[in-house]
Length: 193
Image 1 (cartoon, rainbow, N blue to C red):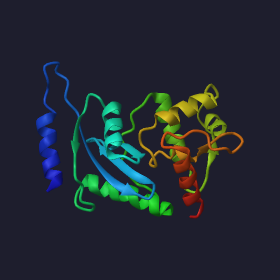
Image 2: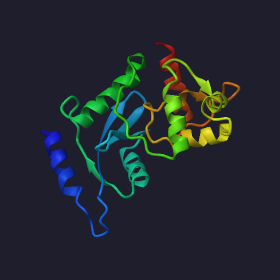
Image 3: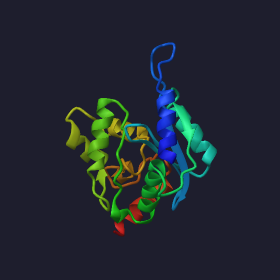
């Protein structure tokens, strides 16, 4: 039933505005995971954001800042009852059991370089890590570790684009949008698989 409501909202909101550009609707839900609050947002094309934090209001503000032109529709997801609820359940399950993987349809939005970095980072298997320098070598001889770090920092789809698996050249944990402690714990959990 929630899917039907979402589709009805999409039909109503995806109508031309005065500027003849459609208004995008993002459905989102928030749940509690092993590492705090998790917000997942979905467009008609797929999951466009997975945000982590400790405060729901902060996550909602982050989502609004990342997608200022979108209409955000909170969906009090019932896990297993609708599309956004199913996606949220997969993310929460991944946090508990990373070996099972995280299979989501993604709507990756970024520059061509960012998307190239994100696709490459997605190929790092659970339980493994790579350095920023290794990612550079994989994607372009003209890139730099700092540019790869910038692409990772801009990643709005935590976990599904596992930038937490990218380390400094000496193996140190260097920066993570969702906090170094979360990065450390994600790597630890994945290493146990």
